[in-house]
Amino acid sequence: MIPTPVVASLFLLGALVALLPLLGRILKGASSYVVQGVMLLVALAWAALFLDGLPLIRGTGWFRVDALSAVVSMTAASVGFLVASSSRRLRNDWQFQLVLSSGVLGTVMLASSADPLILLVSWGLVSVSGYSLLALAGDRSSLVGSIKYAFMSALSFQLLRVAICLMFAGSGNPRLVALGAMLFLVALGFKAGIPPFHMWLPDVYGFAEPVSVSGLSAIMKLGALALAIRLTEQTVLALGQPEGHVMVLVLVLLSAGSMLIGNLGALTQDDVQRMMAYSSIAQVGYVLMGISAFDAALVYGQPHVAYEALLGVFLFIPSYALSKAGIFSMLAGFKGRAGTGVQALAGSKAPESVSASVVLLNLLGMPPLLGFWAKLLVFEAAASSAIPVFYALGLPWYALYGIANSAISVFYYLKVLRAVYSSGKVEADHLHLRVAELGSAALLVLAGLIVPLLVL
Image (cartoon, rainbow, N blue to C red):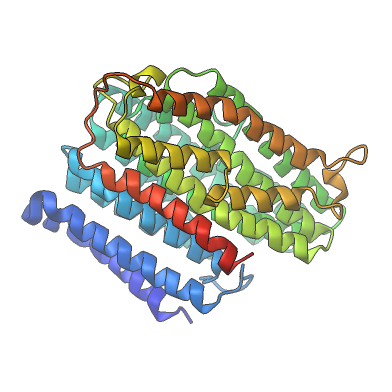
C-alpha cells in the first residue's frame, strides 16, 4: 500500500501540472508562488516519511517507497522550489513552471516505480520536460541545445524500451538480463552525459540559458540515476558470481572515464558556464563510483560496504543537484551582460560571492559541507579491502583515482573563486535569482551540519 503522504504529493504535482495553464493566465507572474508552495509541500511530505524510517532500498512492489525514492523526491522538489523562483525573469514564466513541475513529477515516478510501463512514461515525461525547458528560453543557443537534447533523449528512450523488455521479459534468463542491463547503461549514458556518450552535454549545458540549465542539470537526471541503482542491483543479484563482476567492471570504467574527462575538460575552459558543464560530467562519475561500489559489495557479499556506498550515493544526489542549481542560477545573472568568462565574475557582490564559495567548495568536497560527507563515504567504500577488484599491487587504486581527480578539480574551482573575489566592475542582473543562489548554499551548509548527527 502506498503511504498517504506519497499519494498526496503525487496528487499535488498532478493537479499543479493540470491547472498551471489556467493559473498562469489568471495569476500572471505570481504563479511561481503557487509552484513553490506545492514543491515545498511535496518535499516536506517525503521528508516526513524519510525521518519516520524507511529501508534503504526496497526490492519488491510496483511502487517502492524507500530511502532512495525519498531522497530523490525531496531533492527534486527542493530544487524545483528554488528554480521556480528564477523563472520569474523569463518571458514564458508559467510555461517554464509547467514543464519544470512535469519534470519533478516524472522524476518522482521514475525514482519510485518498478512497473515497466510507468518507467517508460516517466522517462518520456522527464525527457520532454528537459528539452522544453531549453526551448522556452527562446534564444538561439538554447533552441539549438533543445534540439540536441531532444535527439539524445529520443535515442535513449528507444534504448531504454529495448532494455526494459529484455530485463523484465527475460528475468529467468541471466544472459538476457545482462544484455538488457548493458543497453540500459548506454541509455543512461546518453541521458546523463556519461562518456563516451557525453558529446552533447558541454554544448547544451555550456551555452543555453543558465536558468533552464539549472533545472535541466539539477533535476532531470536524478530519476535516471535512481533507476540505475535499482536495475544494476537487480542485475548483479540475478547474475551472481562470476558474471556479476562484468557489470561491476563496466560501471567502474564508466565512472573512471566520467571523472577524468569531466575534470580535464573543465580544467581547459575559460568560460565558467562551460566549465560547470564539464564539472557535471565529473560529478556523475563520483555517483557512478558509489553505485559500482554498492554493486561490487553485493557480488562479494559485503553488506557493510554496500550500506556505506549507498549512503554516499544518497548524499551525492542532493549535493550535486543543489550545487548545480546554485551555480547556474548565479551565472544567469552574468549571461547577456558581461558574459560568463572567468574574468566577468570579478567584483561580484556579497550574495554571489557567498553562494559561489559554498557551492564550489561543496563540489570540491570541503568539510563540513554536504559534498565532503558524500565523497568521504564513496571513497571509503571504494577503498574497502573486501572488494579485490578495487585493489592493485596492494593499493586501493579506485579510491586513489577518485581522490586524484578531486585534486585536479581544485585548480579550476579555485580559479573561479579567485575571480569572484578579485576587484572589478561587475555587470550583472540577479533579479529573481537570489532565492536559488542563497537557498542552495544554505541547504548545503545545513545538510552538511546535520548529516553527521543523523547517519554517521
